[in-house]
Picture 1 (tube, rainbow, N blue to C red):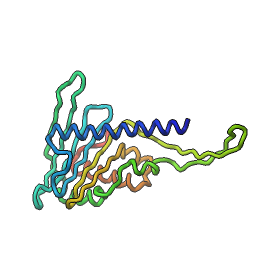
Picture 2 (tube, helix red, strand yellow):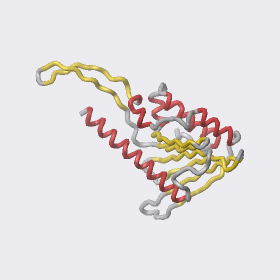
Picture 3 (cartoon, rainbow, N blue to C red):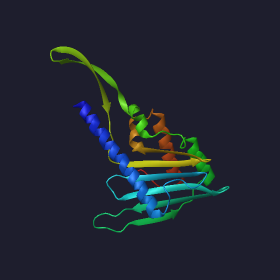
Picture 4 (cartoon, rainbow, N blue to C red):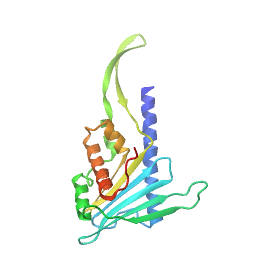
Length: 207
């Protein structure tokens, strides 16, 4: 039963990642962006909310030497009863210079963080070995306690830094950080999102 529950959680997580990828393609098409990065220095962070038709994109890029731009697009997909797709584009201004924001994101390893799926083994409590009787014979089992957060907010990050491309995804980093504050990758992902919140006033946590 425990193994079955873990498989179910894995399947649901995979569906969540697939939904994030679809949201990314939809918002790119609606805005008129390519699915690949355009500039030598560019960061895109796609945010998606589960069980809604809403997603958003923050795009920070160096259009020409020392000429930094940032845009924020909110995308509302077609849904039954509201068949019209809508995009709202906002020009943002950071509290610090945009070059500073870019460097702050690099300081949090935005160009190097792995995909959350590669650190799933860290997102559980260490196993407990217990004894059980199986068909009249004494044996041992290892049980891990896994907390899977299915509904919430996902982020897909694409970067090109000095021409080198990288991308990764995280699901519900705020929630997982509360559960596992000792995991470095969650610490840095939360730093990235908090930098965006502080500088641009978007993606605030609803208490």
